[in-house]
Image (cartoon, rainbow, N blue to C red; front, side):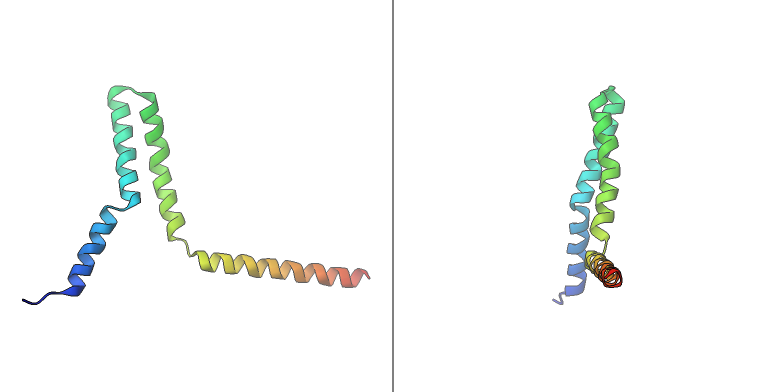
Length: 92
């Protein structure tokens, strides 16, 4: 029997994405919001409103290219130090 490794990898990746932290948090946020709206429970509505946008923020933060971000910040800091050194040399 031929076993397609690529298909198995795709299926495990899909299962991983479905059971990811973001998906579970989103389901919990929606469930909390729905429960709060149905039963008139203010705390559940509050947590649903907090959790749902938090999931999208978490997804955006996880997706960001952090290596490029830190490299850009280091370059900016290096340029700032060079400017300050040049300014100090001109003052003397």
